[in-house]
Image (cartoon, rainbow, N blue to C red; front, side, top):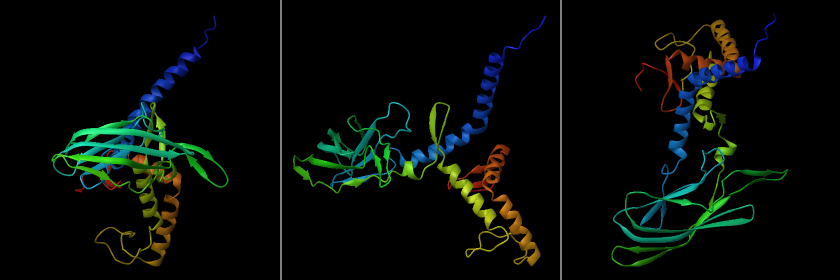
Length: 270
């Protein structure tokens, strides 16, 4: 009697096991990198003045955000309390303008958050030979007015139009895993630093950072030693080897990403 293996069940079990192993290997580092990006790009990470009495922080939703993808703005008073604030937030892109009216009362130093429901998700729409087009290119505040605690009403002059740099699309590195988009800029930077280290291995930079000998060792090595070190550095700076070195260092538990997104010996004081 011939028994056939249930290949579908085997493939499902193998895939399930691999996803568990993959998450155990990569999840913590992905989470660290994504949190680093969020802390410097998320709502509240940067504040800009909105007249003399208020400041605001704007976050425009991107296609890599988890659902629901909604743009937001946070407002807070520089000091004291603003009785009432009213303005129109206007975003523009693809020849269309999108407006949201914002009305806030009793604004103090505690941030007040509002959704910008009319703003589209900021994403790449079209690429042609002469230009790249996004769903949103600029934004500005219009018809702003403030009522102070003493009853005075102040009109806020319309400020300059803010042009979006689209950094996430042009410069950031993203990976989609576990039903989420992860920003890997910290991982990318750490690998770049590792590659730079190996490319300078056997040489001396102007700052003296990259040297082929340990701290306290001889200042100058013999020519044949430097040539050998350069060969080793060239081999070790090959991109796929740099990637392997990075992950092996993380998985060993002896190296961690520091606050500057560089590999650091775990037991070394920051």
